Image 1: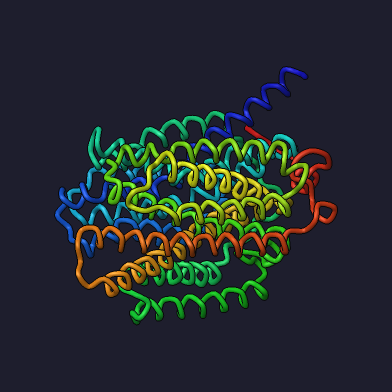
Image 2 (image 1 turned 45 degrees about the horizontal axis):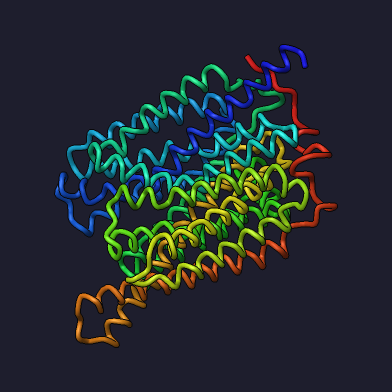
Length: 498
């Protein structure tokens, strides 16, 4: 191997570290603030009703602008968009950490979501266009998929440590040094790629339609979580989202410069990958949300203890991701591996349904978390790699954005549905036990958690069936690992780095 080839190879792996840091920062910010909320509420004196907006402001801006962010990375260039996203996210995080009022904190969280929507799809697009050799691509997506799957759990761990050891504000400040390291790496190692051919135009009508649809979808489900399914705002937003989504699809079929060419999502393998990410995101929130409640409220764990409790799950997720992308996916393909992961996810959720007030972490919680980690490590890397495989370079950003959109929308749907179902089950339990004692209260909460776990198991079961039916067999699809190069590798334009 020549010195130039070796240097180029090292540069690619450093690029993976850089985009991995950016992805971790965006994903963990969806959960890192959760544990800090009680401290922030006491410090800034906002109400319980206002508290949800600290979370919702981020998710609304992030989800509704993801496709726009992905398309901008196609039009402006990956490196430039990536750098802008890093700087903006760091500034927004610093603003949130220094917030002296509830309104400023919400504005900062929304601004984080805006730049996160620019950063997340660009990071995945950089990875897609950097790793075109199948074997290296498999390894890179194994790492990236593990980060995407474990980011929420890392956020809980980091949030607990920062809140107890330092101050709730450091849950936001921590993004500044992470972004600074990633920024230096981006300038030094992420290549700038010269555009060839005519520059396409931004689809402004399509952007407005899909951003409005995603905003209404996420807001509607978030509102259902707090105001209930009978709220006019809930149904109004969801109905409006459906109308805008239909209008967006109709517009994409006729416009010359579509924001999201329908061929990207109508491809059978990519459609299966996007749906798998969505379903896994919906089911996984049952673990992060309700296991956190169970550990802290029922078992009395501290925030740091709760975060540490998720470490074995993260370890299994990383191990499964590496084994899957380097050994099993290249050999068996996503048609076998993703359904196996979904089945494991359903099994892990079923294991969680047996938890009660007398359960122990080692005997009951730990095995379920390790199964869930294995499941997510099997699902996410294979799905993310398939979702961007063979996409034309000029649409790599928007195809990558669809991955993040699927995960974000899935998480929003899962959170709203599972929370509603759990609350209903808890209320029903209390109706059946009118004399409320401390034990009855604990058991009522556990009944709610168990209902959420059963529904989460159902999500994964549906995902297992859909992925088994939708993914093409290996001989019909492209290689995901060794052997024949992926279409992206065969058809890619030469990279001109400077």
